[in-house]
Length: 601
Image 1: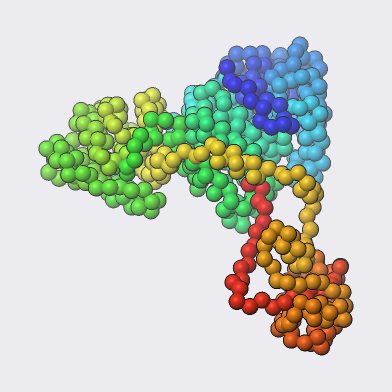
Image 2: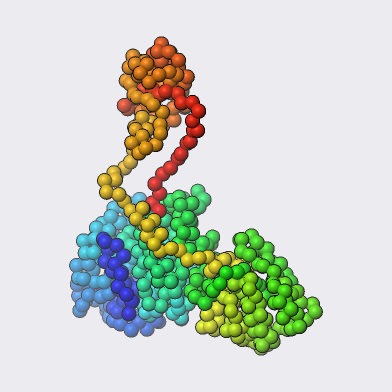
């Protein structure tokens, strides 16, 4: 049974949506291709073990499930209410689900905050969920495929998936659809399509999955960085629970940021700040969805993590693959040390004369299919004092016509059992991966990665030290909103106001004061001493150089009065609260310009 977790103070435990015992589908129908029909069909194919009710006053049964006119007609509150109806009707249904005491809601319907016309509806949906402390996934997502619970509450047709240990959280429904449909042998525990994240965001789901039984790794596909405090806390929990995390975040380019905003209404945030947090957490960073899924696969294999310090060794029967592996390793910064003399001495008698006894080790195709020899090569290389990880390249063709491929597979498994270093297997081409081989290797703790580049990057990710949970919680505390912080829209300070705050915080600023007219400016200059600078300041005047709103190196009161008169006569672009800032010119000081902003992460 999953551990109960309250993800934040405003939202109740979402675990009923991750392991529901009963489900209602609002909008259940037998109309082919509709979300309501697809969800019901998925639940029927998965043989969901609990009761399922369709909610549709115009149907008696859908996919064999009984239909009721409304949620109020349910014999008891359900754990999960899946909503697939027009957007305008959704807030009322969410309110009804909460009033009945249902466990949570999944809103597949679109037409909310991702479009201007739907923002009011999304606000109503949020209010309805908040009234009843109701966990909610979506809207504008594909739902939740809780495969471990045989509960695919998913808005696309799926079936035949084998439950596993990898979870996926994605703001893009299509990334989830593709992951579930790919023939790569990744067996998912749960796939969550968060959509607009109106109530629960990716950090909430990450925290919930970190304590879910059977989850070993989580992949996150994000369009928005979200709440930094919650994300850092969720990553800390993953570190504490030993759950690996791989993350891809779009929005590093202007075009990517615009696409994210158009898709789910998400603001991309500062990419550099977000990546720094990911690295602090010891999580793996992905550049595209294929790599994300492969990294998540690798992170779910705890035996693939190095048990000692050292570099990567690559074993292959191909000189070309050897060169490619070495180049990729160099490009990503993973060390491939030369094999120790003693290791080479042990290897040479076992290998053909054409073999390259080095790192990478090209053992040649002449020993292909020799299970025992491949296992022994793996053991010898893994015992090298400079090696912490062994990568075995193994391309499994879709039309294998002899038994040698199975013999190599057996050799990899036997070698992993004997190895003192962590072992990873990989197909050099992503298509040359066999789902049955993937599962057999996974049963022995060996991840089988689709793609040579992905495998080398996975090796680097697995070798990264885990994050420091205490440090991540410190980051979370620092990112939390501070009492007394201004709410609502912010506004620019003028230069005098900003420098007053800096001075109060102990930062050295030039001596100076403000004045409202030329005579006052001259008086300030006489008081602080010459030479001085005189500047026009106002909250709406951000770039003084654009309107020539400063005068430097003034040596007399007469020069100050003349400069002040000129500045006050300038058109300050309609700025309110215009005044003069008179400062003594500083000499012999190092000048530092700092630009900073408070990022959500």
